[in-house]
Length: 145
Image (tube, rainbow, N blue to C red; front, side):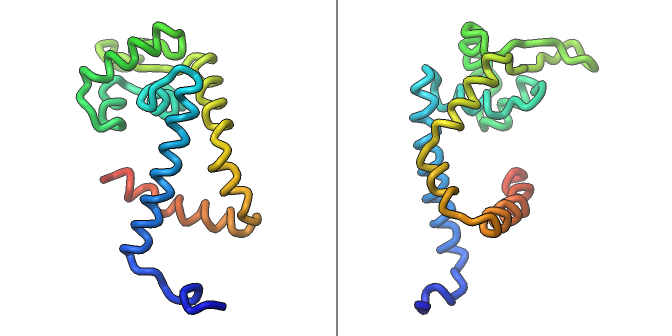
């Protein structure tokens, strides 16, 4: 076993590795989205829609102004990938909901990310479970930022 395999990585090394993986994942996600006529931002919106999400909530998730979200949602709605519906608790709030077609497109985008699938296929079951648990621990604090 080499010395590097037994050394604890520094935070900087971990950050650089996470950034490299995130960049590669984002690049592949954008390329797969483009194959379906979507911008990376449009695909990000679809990926966020597990259920109804308020327009303002999408702006927060995308880290952009709410007026930008309107145009993005307009284009997705024109392709019948999402629909707007009034919030049940506050009819002034418009929620964005993925249509069946929108859910199918984002499923295909994710499915077509072959480099990511290939990388994950190199892990055995124990390594996959460990990675999932570790990323799950990091996610809440990362999403607060």
